[in-house]
Structures are given as structure tokens and as C-alpha cells.
Image (cartoon, rainbow, N blue to C red; front, side):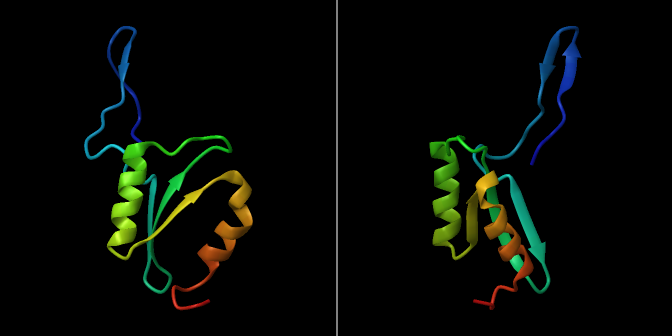
Length: 87
């Protein structure tokens, strides 16, 4: 989830956020393609400890979770095109 910054007084901006830090950037669900959780990272972006905690927790519950970077575009396209039961 990404929220828009808000100016609370001249020169003071905040990004209102509620929820849990580290939760994946995307949750995508489709009736025939399943639900996936995705943490998006820049080429050299680092996955934080709180993000890893979420990733492992979701995986342990059986969820399909990814960390995607720009270099993964072909894998991303392939995954988004297939159904969960496809191999």
C-alpha cells in the first residue's frame, strides 16, 4: 500500500500510514490465477528484516510470495500469465 503525503503545516509533510511495517507492496488476486503477494525492490534494494518476517510468515501459511526486481520482468510476465495449477 502506498499513501500520498499530506502537508500538516507549512514545510511539514507526513505519509499517513496504518497497518504493519514490512507488509508486501502488492497483493494481487484473480479468480482463476490465484492470489500472490509481492515485495517490489529496485535493482540494489535491500529487503528489510520486517519485510522478511512478513515474507516468511506468508510462505509458512501456504501463500505464494515473491520479491521482484526490474531484472525479473520475464519471470513476472510468465507468472502473471499462468494459472496457479500450471507448471
